[in-house]
Length: 163
Image (tube, rainbow, N blue to C red):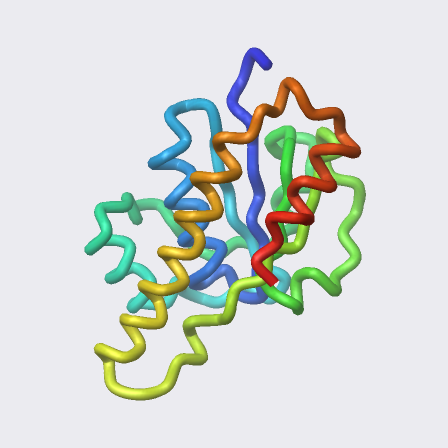
């Protein structure tokens, strides 16, 4: 492929999980992968604890903001290679045909914004989510995309599902 693989992560509000996945891929993708994130029901802002945890882990947060998935359906949208839903709300949504006819999969992660308790307990839940996303993205980015046809790739991504 003569360009980076484009990944879109969709969650319910695009305020934590999908933003974390976007940040991880954009830092660790080494120019081979480029990530975007969006929501079914976008939040007004990214959750401050998500920003704090990403900053603490050394991820760039500048420019991250909640977006609606429809921003990725127009003629000027990036050609997508993969679309991952990260929440049950997003996975139950019927999406249109995406530009690029991407391979899609549902990789469910618990919503850290629902964490209860003291601030340190909430940070811990966000950290657990970030660690799980980092692990899964490391495995994903090591797949041999050239050796897998579309059906085999879809099967492999489904096997990797976190939920």
